[in-house]
Image (tube, rainbow, N blue to C red; front, side, top):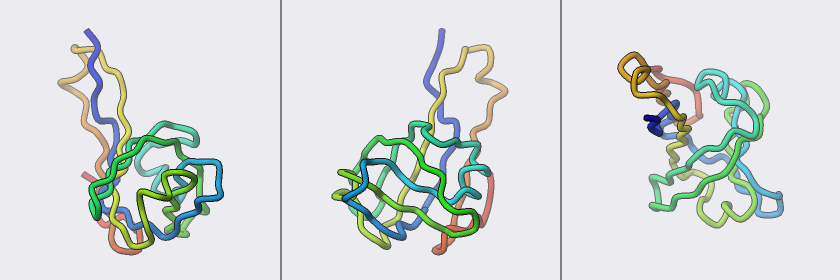
Length: 118
């Protein structure tokens, strides 16, 4: 049997900008993407800690070391600069692989730098 499991999570990312005129997606600092093993166009679930909004989108690589977290397109209605987000990616796994799998959990500071990796 296959199960949907958490692959990676970036906890308390801070929205640096919103851009309603963009086609859609979430722009994320390349450092955060690499550390969480996320790639451009990968689907992510976004949970806004600040206002309770939730949405699903895909990632766009942002400039390395920029600290950028930009909510684009229609999702820009669900966040504003300064909001805290949880960004989560999921994967399908076979039952026999689950016991040995540990998701990547990144905790960020207020400037979207990695404080801790669990």
